[in-house]
Length: 365
Image 1: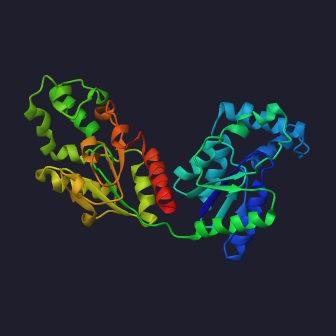
Image 2: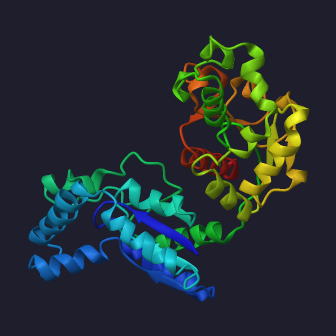
């Protein structure tokens, strides 16, 4: 199932675009449904707030007041959670779900990060004079996506024939399989949480009280001044450390999605040969879609060819012939990444967004 979220100002043609998409996709044999984030809101407003269903000045005030000013202010994901959860339960029912009333970033992002293939389309109607009041035009539901990144932008200049051509081109793009990428990613402190486990084991073994956030340098001994170098690094040879590894939050979901999309995934890790067996066994347990042929041991990662490298070590990214993503960890927070054309990511959701942006740019080029 693919979800198409459509954004745009009031009366810019979101519903018209959605209807054209549905008609053309159905002619291609697709099962398509048009739904709305506001379906539940409209029911509530009609049932409990006396809304007559008209989007006049009074009607829009009721919708904005109930939907945004009250409910969304107290529970930002209230409306989006409902519809995302619903369609997540019925992913085999439709080929396409079209949502022509996407007004906030979280509505799109909750779908995207749920693992469902989702695109965001912006419909723009040039030189159109809005019938909304100045207050309504300035409302968050009209402005929240003004500066957002869109996968596609459709110009609707009131010529329906031109709009149909534009929609047909969009469908061709949507139906085209994505160009597979070769994505390289580090293991330690990118796909899994080695540093957390390492700090915890040292604290337990030697009675220290170092916090994960205290490790602000690549050299772990600086964070453990009372321990010898042999004590700090010796635990790396202990199988217990590697058995403790857990996936970094979001890594399994994002990597699985990329794998399902047909991208080539290679874990590139600089490991001591004495730890390889137990480490790789644990990695394959956490990421069962990988195999030994997709794990590369290399201390000089610049020699490995790929489209993208995700790593927590800036030395592995500098001078590499790939799109560079630095996964944020305490030991790399102070590094200046801009001068090296490196993109910093706080979470795996951030990583996924950067990879999608790279894929879109490459498609255009």
